[in-house]
Image (tube, rainbow, N blue to C red):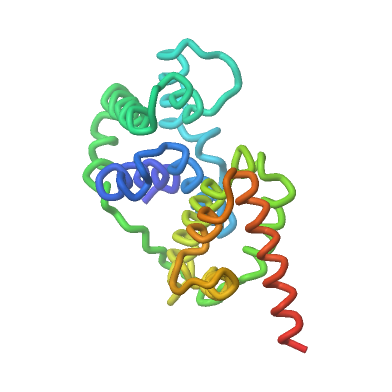
Length: 234
């Protein structure tokens, strides 16, 4: 499977099978794909940024900009969200734009992608070594420059970014479940806040008001957790 098709396939998979899981919100989809692609690029499966080099996404971006008469610098997700009243309408408008561009430009090539919308990537040369330091380094980069990776300080976007990242990691590495890395931190948060088996993002979402506060609380709790690990290792 050509690497430049993978993001389009993921988008079609989401539409076919996971629309409600993403709350019909293209901001969540954007963050998820950003995390997924980050891991794919680290593993060497995506040599370039598909949004800047991929023919289909260039055409999709141009179509959306022309449709809404926008020349300013903004992502296609942000453009649709700005001109749409609610998340679900934005979701449907986004996928309508995808269908239009697919039908306009890629013909039989596109049909082969549509036929494989439920395709699950399996790489021939997987590694069995999960490098947790890469995730630690990534989180530090996100903490320092959230705008670069997420567009803003947002726990929701961070959660979806990490979900996409870990889904890709599970494809790249043998015998790894997507929640493998965050599992112990999630247990720590449950104990810290007096819960049992709650998702880490749900806990922080419940106890903070703004997305920026939730984002900051995540990294504060992560720092505390790291200190506990250091003490227990002594």
